[in-house]
Image (tube, rainbow, N blue to C red; front, side, top):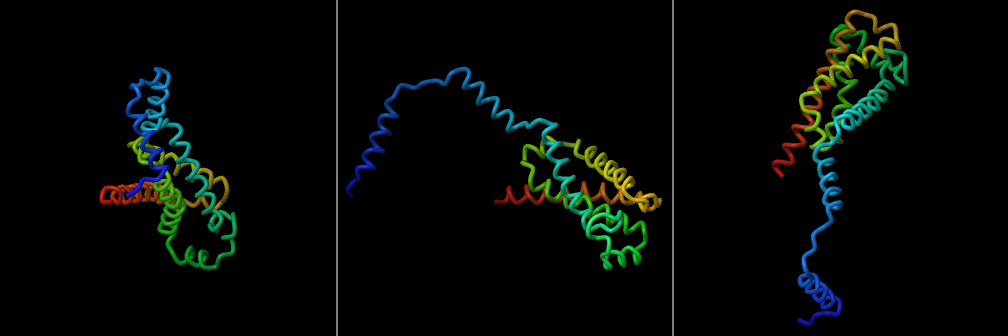
Length: 181
């Protein structure tokens, strides 16, 4: 088999590379690489929570576009949702509404956040989910009078369940796929 000129050139460059005396990188280069690796392996807490909040808020606002409950978006005149609201007990309706409102955000968060970012969240994700659910509810209370109904407190329970169950389910499925692949 005849070697081409490009193969001979590659072989020549490789031999030159092997024969060169070893050179250690500078201390500054070492520190820069170590800092980059540390940042990748342990992202800043505030950065991860900021990313999680941004995803949750963006998805929450998009779900408001179809929710008739607070008079926002295109869902104001959706007969199916109004009929569902009228046919379901308020406790169940608000529970499911809260679950739906946040589930899209946490499912997307579970898919978007990296493994190290999820690990950075640790158990503090439950505090975040609780705080986010309370803040979302308080904002929604400010947007519409219907939220003052006592049974709408179940919206918060649904939101909390949606956050925890949705996020945990997605990251477990995502990491199970990685382990078996």
